[in-house]
Image 1 (spheres, rainbow, N blue to C red):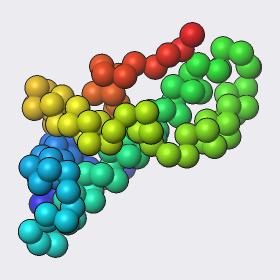
Image 2 (cartoon, helix red, strand yellow; image 1 turned 120 degrees about the vertical axis):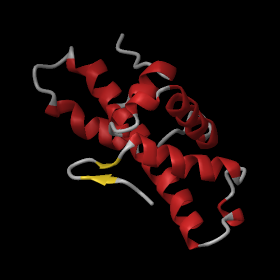
Image 3 (cartoon, rainbow, N blue to C red; image 1 turned 90 degrees about the vertical axis):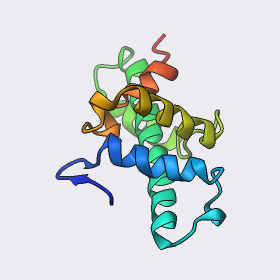
Length: 128
């Protein structure tokens, strides 16, 4: 059962559990046993893609905001530049990195994945 919190959606614990099921299937949605497994697999994939996408956008904005007095100048650029997520790394490796981080940080299970903590540790923003 997915845990949903108002304002943020899924928490790290629920995402971890969905992603663990997806990883256990060899990252193959075709191996889903039933509709609940399909839901877990697609929730994992979709949320990870969304978190990575928002993180990449934040990185681009932070990198470029020093060159402008208006952050809005870079919003459209960032949104257009990163239309696809995790293109430099295999999405299965990105999901596995979240699973590993979540296993090591159960004290953060009730937080939102959109805090980007696991991405900051593995793929820090290049702001130079």
